[in-house]
Image 1: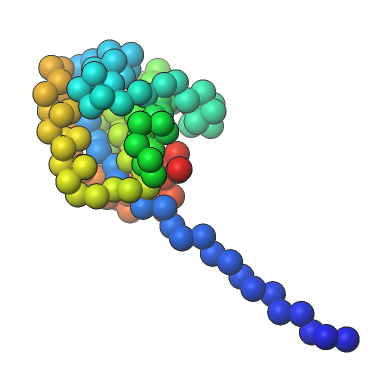
Image 2 (image 1 turned 180 degrees about the vertical axis):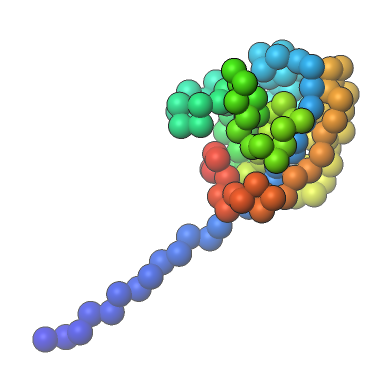
Length: 135
């Protein structure tokens, strides 16, 4: 009887970046403004929202190999990431996360009235190993 070899396959981890956004805008205002400023198409992601319990909007169509997700960090007195208690929204960019795209996105976001702060956050700070919404 021949011995069988089991090969362990590991998926390459998906690269992702997080942008923390403090804003006075509602989630619907934020989505509309981001769609306009960044020329993307964030749409309601009910699947992720059901899992997290926080409002979530995703664009998988605009850029090949890149997924952009906006997640509300606060809802009904609850906070998704307590370490970011002063942050209202988290934008996750997964897949192709080249530095120039991130810099351009931050520049476009800063043009939106109602956004006070945008900062990059290391996923490890939030103990995230995988993106919420991968390609």
